[in-house]
Length: 353
Image: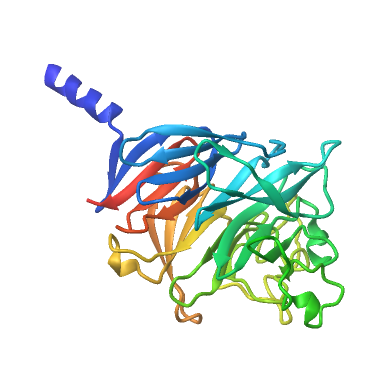
């Protein structure tokens, strides 16, 4: 009996769990983490939605908080969102306080300083809106371009209005300047100059593939209609003309899943799994996954793998479910290919057993 009791205690308090051939380890606890990025092989910089930026050493588990000057408003789904490191600079997306409870999905840039980040805005979504819903917002860098997803703030058809930023994919240069080959300058005269694609709802996944150099995106539908697809210049994913197979929360129909004239996603989920961060895997730890899309989810609490090189025959595999809770972010270690997740309360490590 005593032996059984001790075994129970060890299992109950263990920070390591197993799923098939995978081992999961809790690295540290956090408070509603949202975005993360490796700044070197040992450290991740992480945002917490409530307003903190932290640097975590994945080996020593040391946590240090970084001061910053962002004028954010943590309301509803808003707060500090995605964060991205490259070449000694940091980019961050966040819900900026624009006064009178109005906020925007904004992007700021700072030189990396582990004690204090002095951010300067390089993008503000217009107009500011009094809503705590659907900010997006992920970041990805390709060459000298910064891509960002801006949610439609719960405003529906605003995603079809290219004179407003909500509900679109943004492309700017790394310093915030506007590329001269954006759609506005190539036949879309009424589009705002930063807009690259329109018609998205709440895109919380955005990544660049290290294989084909394309930008990929995941998007929340309403009651069903989540999807994974490719970002395409000057095109329209259709929200809220299209429902992507989902319905309004009231149960009423929205529109068709897809129709000609709109961008077609690579994979849809009905009912919704609440797609979150995505990545195209490239690494040593899970060599058989190289080139495949990894899709995290909030509601479904799962990791799914898509083999999508043949768009007419996409193969989906469920890697795990209900192991680490709602998954907000995913990062691949730049050297060993091990996978790090942000759940609602923890930073997790996944590796082969």
